Length: 172
Image 1 (cartoon, rainbow, N blue to C red):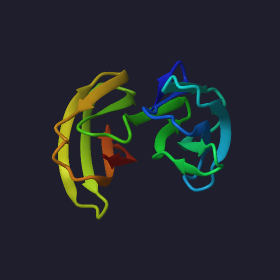
Image 2 (image 1 turned 90 degrees about the vertical axis):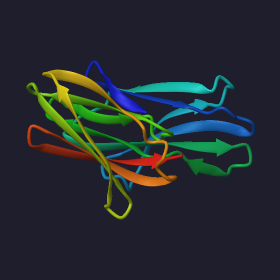
Image 3 (image 1 turned 30 degrees about the vertical axis):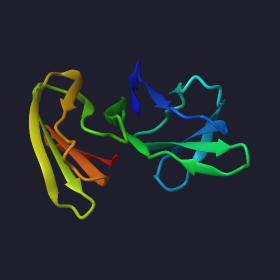
Image 4 (image 1 turned 120 degrees about the horizontal axis):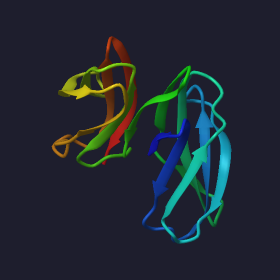
């Protein structure tokens, strides 16, 4: 998951089975395609890890993923999480990602208003829709009852005060 913490991005991940894992490499991208390693952590058996990204320099989207490296040199990637940045820092994130039955939308609103939430499947078909009232500042909006969705890729879109953001999600 990725979220705002004092104008920095706090990244957290868990892994219940670290058998055969050597290390985790946290990677960041500004385009969602080309990733660079920003942190390395040994797989220590504690199953829960976090990293605070303080090197945020520009507006736009930042994408993060974890590369899991095993003892034989093989690897696999976690799902990608994204954070939308405006000139003052992060203003949107969704966690957990991947999800099972619910997500939380963290958004920063410039003024009081209404937040529209839409979830579309990989083909763009609307599968869930909702709304919530938000106050000026940081808001945490739970969005549940998603267990009936089939496993796969979804897009969560939020609209607040005329501004739309979108994040890619994976349903387990």
